[in-house]
Structures are given as structure tokens and as C-alpha cells.
Length: 113
Length: 112
Image (tube, rainbow over all chains, first blue to last red; front, side, top):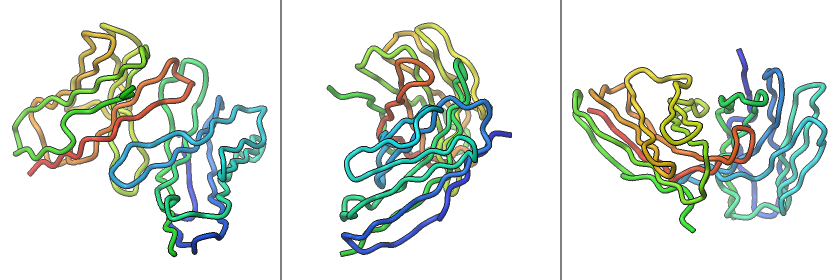
């Protein structure tokens, strides 16, 4: 069964600090991995999409990494801001023509002043 | 440019009642999806559509029906609501299945 596991489940950081979120997956075959940000009461919004050949992709203060050999990904948030408080969801796509995305349960990040 | 719009945002139903959730997208996307999000779990695919007039079952289709009569609209129906269908429902659309999916703001449904 294709699975996506995220850790930690939640974390609290001080404004201005950095943090790293982890995503491990067993989805096979692999097409791409996405990180989404979901604010409370809103729908997920895409941050990055990485294919098999991409190791790193950045979007402003967000940097995602991918190790397709070990099936691990991370999302690094630099110089956190209060607006970064949200749930971050790791999503893996299995392959061409596969409409089912495998979603992680998300990591809830709380940034405190 | 509104993107993906869901109607309604909130709804409370009694067990056995029926309702329809509407999803509209203005990006001319072929692919549309309905997901449900439950606490502690990842989003799960209910039904999806690869184009106007076509629909298919996803991971958790039981108790739901869908229709895609127009390319821009994707409707999710609950014929006889059950408490197990209490959830937050998200509609999404994409150009192709492996490209970025754009999500609506969600519909919070409570079945009592």
C-alpha cells in the first residue's frame, strides 16, 4: 500500500528561527513529490513540485529536498514568520496517468512571536 | 481570477438528508477531483473526472455520487447523509493528473 509518513506531527518555533519537516514515502512507481501549505480553514496551496531528477527546489523561504533513493523529502523553512503558521502536507504522485495522489497527514507548524 | 470555488462553505445535515456540493473552476482544467479531509489523516480521493461527461471512483466513493455536465463544474452528491460523512470536503482541479492541483477553500459538513 502506498504510504506517506510525515514527522513531526506538530512543532512550535519562535519567529525568525528555522525548522525542517520530514516526509518518508513508500509510493512506487514515483512521478513527483509536492509540498502544500494549508492555512486553517483554507484549501491546500502548492509550494513546490519535484520530479525524480530534482534534488532541491526553493520557493522564497521554503526549500524542499528530495532523495528518491531513500524515498525521503524535507521542507526547510528559513527565518520563520507568523504567517508560516499552517499545516504542511507532503503529497506523492505514483505515475503517469495515476489519478490517485498519496497524501501525508501533515505537520502543523505554529510560529510564536 | 477566482480559481476553484466551492459552495457552500458550511452545512449541517440530519442523518438521511441529501445535499449537493458544487465546485466551479475558471481555469479551463480538464481534471477535477473531490477529496475528504478527516483529523489525523491525509486527504482521500472520493471521485474524480478526466473531462466533461466523465467520472470515476476514487479511494472512498461509497455513499457519494458525482456529475460533470459542464467542464467548469463538478458536483458531489450525498443521497442519504450519515454521521460518518462528517468531514471537510475539498474540490481540486488540474491541467493533467501529474501537474499542480489547485484546491478550493473547502466545505465543512456536519451530519447529526
